[in-house]
Length: 186
Image (cartoon, rainbow, N blue to C red; front, side):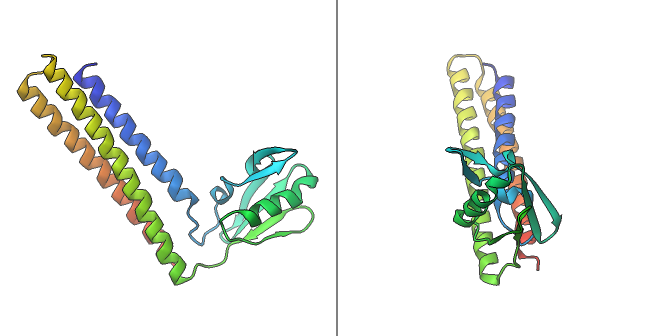
């Protein structure tokens, strides 16, 4: 591996850390309906754990409601049970055709808890970004040890990777600030 390959690999891996952060943020319930709320819910459907989206149409008709319309009406009760057993704390209503989930407004305490969770996800993302930096720095030091890079080139490469790391950490902070603002919005 050469210096440029290591740098490209670092940026790619840091970008993946930010994408993972986005996925974690999508799972957080902010008082606003989102189809991503049911992404992790799996239903025991004929002995197989099946994601809700693979057995129904999930939509948000308004900002406070998620509707789930199963393709197999027999799965209605199974979907309802899976939602009740999930850690979302939501009560689905079944009208025979559609399972409706009404999203209640968040309490102040719950908002503060969600902000803490948001900060935890952000910190995990930053740790992942810093781990990428460490791996790349180790790779650069190995290149210097193998006489591929000079000492000056190593110093410059490490400075460059630090700048990239700082920019990705700042992006994670921006995403966190936006998510916290969304959570605290009433």
